[in-house]
Image (tube, one colour):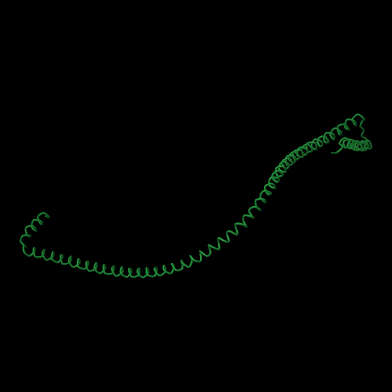
Length: 223
């Protein structure tokens, strides 16, 4: 921050010098001011300069206060972060010690498991040898069974083809019978229609006079 007292004093001296120069110029021009007027004007100028300096100082003071407030806030946040990190460090240290203890236990378990593994490996090897021999025997048996299955499947396919041929022949026979039945039914129907038509013609030829009154009656009804 500036030394504002010195700044104000420098501004006042500068104004006095300017004032003396102005007075000197006015005196040369024949215009004179008394000492009281000079003092009053000088005081007004100094007061204006002082007021401007005070406003500048207030602005810088507010700026400094805001800056200090921001720095304090940042400092508080930093302290909170430090406390959080310290707490996390302590927690991590505790976890690390717990992990180291757990690792030691796991290493001991691993050694025991390795010993058991080697022992079980030998047992498993012997067991696998026996199972492999049994597997080969079973594969041989399955191979024979597969051959029988293939032979049975071939016979089954042959039977299926024979059954399919018989089914197709039966369907052809059924269709032939159905066509014959349809043909006979059509012929019978045609014969019935022919017979019916012949009967009608005979009836009309036998009684032509019986139909005449009916025809006259119909004509009268129409009129």
